[in-house]
Image (cartoon, rainbow, N blue to C red; front, side, top):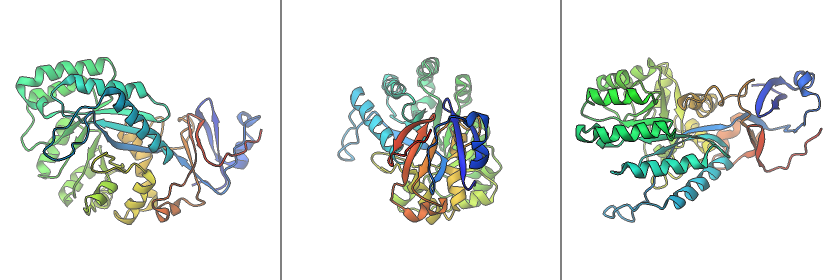
Length: 358
């Protein structure tokens, strides 16, 4: 933490961070525009690794068949969601598509819409949940063609794989290797030996943990290079206690916190709420929660070289909160404290209309 600090930005990148007196004396700061944020918390923009979107509408009842949305409606709804996330301080997010569609064309159509939205005003990472049909030998060839097309057109940045009770066949792992795409694993709990085998085979960048982990599972993940992702908002809505994050930290593991947004089951996208619940329910420190929603989350998305911290050389994705102390974030649960947000050095939120001094 730097008291009375400043961030020097040029051409969308951070040039220097440090005490205001030192920054003001730098040659690069001469003639710079001064945006005063005295009495505010200045921090990296939030990074949300777990926003779920679908090309299919939520059915009115469990018996009803889900209908496919029109591409334009999917685009508009997703763009509205992105702007809502931005208003609460999320400047980078991973959008996870999980249509489970029998038609590869549906997945490609949705990914094209996400690609059309691009990285403005929020940096987006596109992830595709692998359908269960990818495991079947009879459908593997068609799925291989689909993956090749997605990779060639740069429509997807990573793949998501849900753990299965039965082992995945060797040709399936060989197929994943050919895509050269990072894998994110969903681990719903189970045998520690099975988890260890999956980590060795999938070599995931992150593991999403929707249920409480045993001490043995925490020990395995604690010695693994991958990051464990938790969603305290979803745990709250499902009335579930999950002390695994604290156990994993004690085991030496790195944790990530995400909103787990889902239009049907968990319609919460505020990362400020995530920090508050992580402190109040998961018993993490505020510092651990902030790290888990910024730099750790950036590593989980493969974006740590650009975002997640305020340091020289990184993109100027900066958040200014209406708080004088970062430790106040959990105490203002449910209140949006975002005062300003800069993405690539440009204002995307300015609620106080700060007066810039030349």
